[in-house]
Length: 168
Image 1: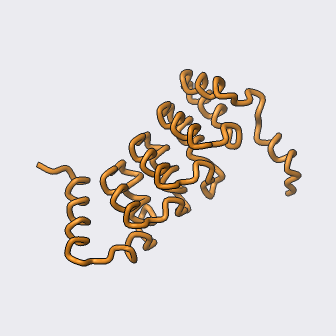
Image 2: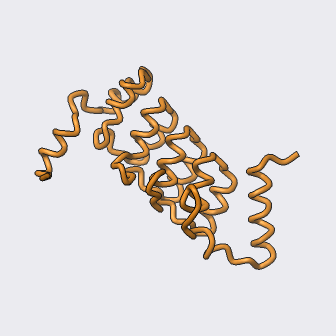
């Protein structure tokens, strides 16, 4: 018996094998998750994510509610999906509309493997308060990973604002 993800992946492959050009569809906007890659990332459907990425889906597309596909997969704890997106060129430092990064999402959930993947991909460990949200979530191992990687224990959003001269 096939799971839903495998069935969807087979359907996409069948469409492609019969000459359907899915490029126009893969980045089409709409629905709860914004686009197909966002939905597949939010649900951890690795096979579908890989098919969509291979077909040219925009790995840095934004959705007002769920940020990027990388943010969605990081938030939900899908490390395989995160790795696929990183390998496809997803920017580990893109912020959601609410100014949250994938690293912050992974840290808030205590998703340590994803925290490691994102740091290896160049995520800025101080930009979004990942250490602060890991601490608030009582994710001791995540806190230790971030500190060991050099996270600034004194970092606060107001420090970042003052450094860049942001105004009201």
